[in-house]
Image (cartoon, rainbow, N blue to C red; front, side):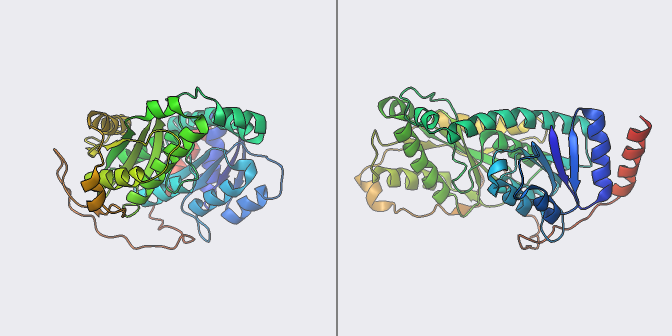
Length: 368
């Protein structure tokens, strides 16, 4: 696998270079700035299979670099792993929105790094298959219009604001658990008659129907700035953290009302929005469990029925987030506000004792 590693600290680049040679057959090139990295890929043939980008860099940080790489057609599906400290949850969230695939925490656990690179390698080939369909008109038509599309399959809403792929979403939730983000929650929306819509309409019309639901979900959660994904089988999942949570009952009413007045080729989608599920522990299995719990709550909830009284009393407005305890949920104290930074600025570099740690790892790898 051909990798480009971008970090403004030479010691990190040297550390990763030595480690990757020990871990497997990786061809590594490095850059010490986002500007240098862009010069290595812009206007040139595809040279890299994946990228490792430091979030903390001057002039242009790794988040903005990630977005720039995604704008390059040659790398729109290439795995991008962010190099980050676990405490930087706000930056990790922005990185996933910008198109990041996964993350690697600092200081590095090399077994974890190897596992994530192997996952990125598999993702590279699955993304390539999608790209092949997009570049082949006849193949793309068969994907869009085939009558028996797998209902359980994931749909691509990557061009919808704050939507990320399912694998990226699972990685994001995992990072939330590792960073112990305050009030980490998730809720799900299910289209109760999704299977019926899938059978009665073409794949294109089914996609358009689900797209309408996705857009209303984005509109209803915009104040909270939540990240979203579609997991298949008519189910959407939303992850939130902090002291402001979306009012799921109000969101359900608003989306159901908006859908009831829209025009669809097939049946109107009937939705149910489950209550928030809270991340109860912070361990490797807590992320997947949070997603499962959120989906289960949506599956247990009846679809919301829109009647004349509902349409007259509910206007199509953004569902404003509220700070409120959920069932079995105790609200934690609010964290002190962090100073905001411009998108092109570099996050703070508080790295206690890291130089000594890196030197120790380098010495051990060289001597090993």
